[in-house]
Image (tube, rainbow, N blue to C red; front, side, top):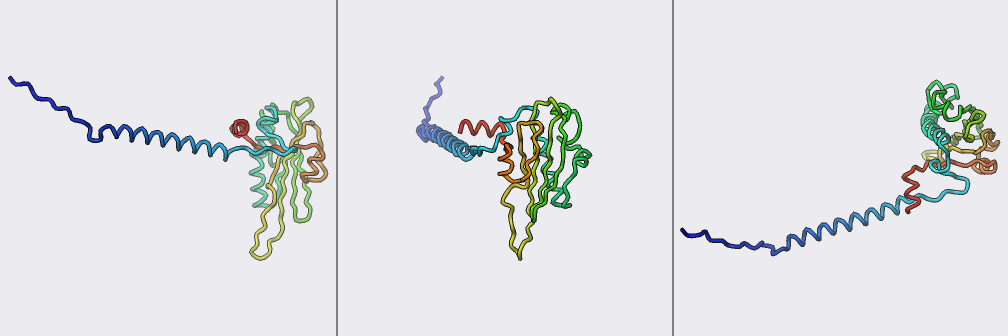
Length: 210
């Protein structure tokens, strides 16, 4: 009985396929690393001014809870004012169950804040302040949610854009600090208030690592 013959078949590419796969994998790795490096540089968090603080790292747990509530409520207050040209009262904010104004379990836990709305229209500028002070003995400072709306009339088709954000949140370490009489950055700074910037924990990691 004759044994079957055997023949060794060499790969047509003579090993080039493996080299191509390795080169492709290397190219993909280099491209990904480059894109990550560029993205990290672009995501670098800018340094703050002397009168600004970071919500995530510069406020304690209770203060951060108040800030988060104000940051969320500010959007709704601003939208309602744009539609109805009215600033919600503190009582209305409580009825809408908007923290930190509504007196719920979180309100009790985070200092039992008392809020006051103050309107200070000045020419074309519509200014509203929501000032909050904690109850006696609470371990938190004072807060102000400041709205600055410029209602200058547009001339022709020209559109005037505001030179500032529609709302800002300011903090003072004193629990009973009154709102400044002049509702400008310089007025707040002179009175010792700090503007709170909403940088997240992820932003802080990017700031530190670059």
